[in-house]
Length: 179
Image (cartoon, rainbow, N blue to C red; front, side, top):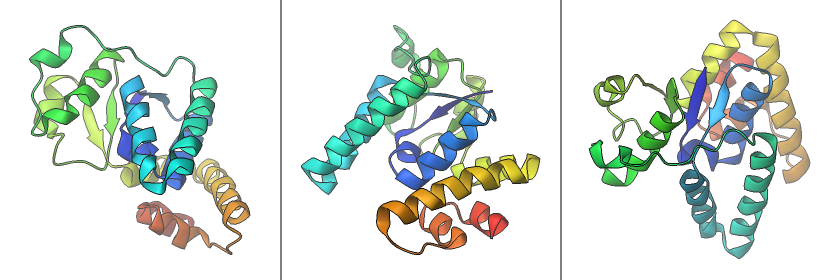
């Protein structure tokens, strides 16, 4: 299954790491566009120059780990598409160009299911998406989440608990399942 990851699920570190961890263990194949990755870097600017630099380093790592994930824009596709927010049309165009099955986003309002269905796509919020993987393979997802938790503890120096970390990362259902 090919899954387009929107900027809003790539930029928060914990969410991204859990999503990409699920991809690493074979649940799906991630895709994105150069513009989505650039939006991630620009969003990190709000943290200051170091935030953008860190994001660009993370983007380089993600590109190296998934060299086939970046899809080029398909000529003419954006012009025929409509979404409530025209600034999101490039995301739908990338999903189409990459032959995605699912678009994972927190931005449900701007990606109406009927519009996506016309393009053969479905939409999922990251928490429900990841919870489904947990239902299919609880131990696999526990391993992914534990690695993210360990890294969060290491980087922050804080004694994070799984449920609290995932809730803060807008993954409350997965956090509850993993306890």
